[in-house]
Length: 120
Image (cartoon, rainbow, N blue to C red; front, side, top):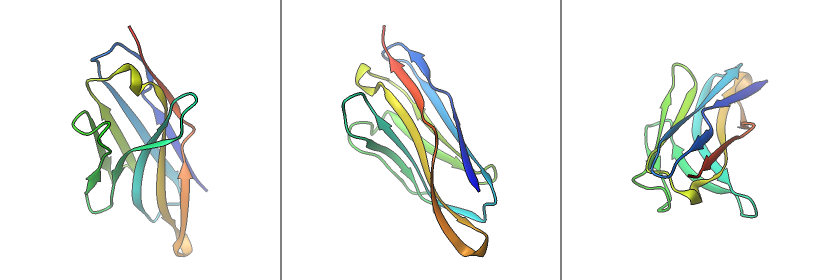
């Protein structure tokens, strides 16, 4: 069983910063992709950041230059540093990881989500 524990959401003023964390625990052999998604009320879920096991990162234009994804492989943890936040960044942010567990099985695991509210 693999679980993800997220933290770091909250209320921030426009232009402010927040850092989200997502730690994976359980019987993990390795982790491939680590991603952050968000979903605003009434909108579709959006992929906002991807980090590969090789160190590559990808962002959509909506957050490029403002958000930074990073991972600490020793701690099985992924972070999302969000700067210059805008009201339209308000959403529930969820981490998503592709893990390899014993017996070489591959699982996709989701975090429970953390609310980020950008408002004055």
